[in-house]
Image (tube, rainbow, N blue to C red; front, side, top):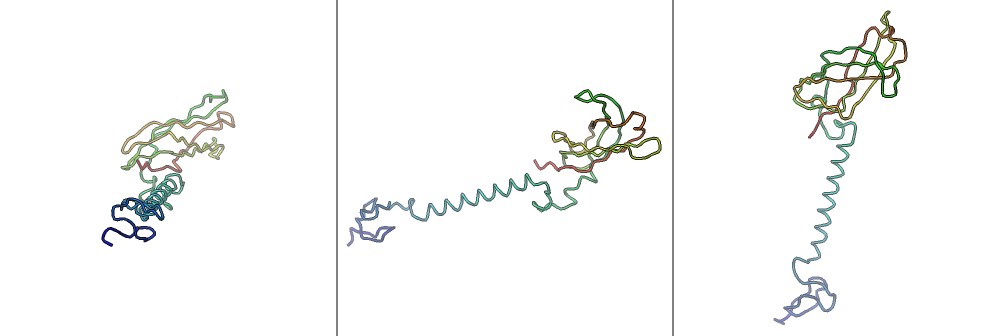
Amino acid sequence: MENTKKCRLCKSQIDKDAKKCPVCRGIQNRFFSPIIPIVLLNILIAILIGMALWAICDICSDVSAVCGISDAESSYNNGLVITESELKFGKDKCDKDAVIIIGKIKNDSSANWHRVNFETRCFDPDDKLTDTAQESNYDFMVPARQEIPFKVSFTRQLPEDQYLRHEIRVIDARKDRY
């Protein structure tokens, strides 16, 4: 009996030096234990779940709800300020009449902001709202503690004299997490 041992898988008696069980063909090395594939599968599943959660957090438009970021941490309201803006007229890419707002935006926060969404309102001489537009530029980023220029343009719907005054504000922005 001293020259035999039990198979790790089927528990039948095999030769002490056997590397494979002649009954079940199970490998007797401890690194090929039946528990190893289960452990590796669980690690793989944990990695895949982690990657899926990261992707959802990265893609989701409501970062604060999914990732648990507080409103104070994710708010652009206190950080992004439009310091100056000027209303101009010109042509767009399709050679149509366009309203162009050129100005500067300042980031007072310690975070970079991207995907800035601007809202423009234009008023006539009687101070009535005549036109409005929203524009998002996914490549536009406002670095932390800097002031940079911006441009918003949209197709003009009315004659130039109906665009006496304008207001522009930031209505949405994403905090750069990288």
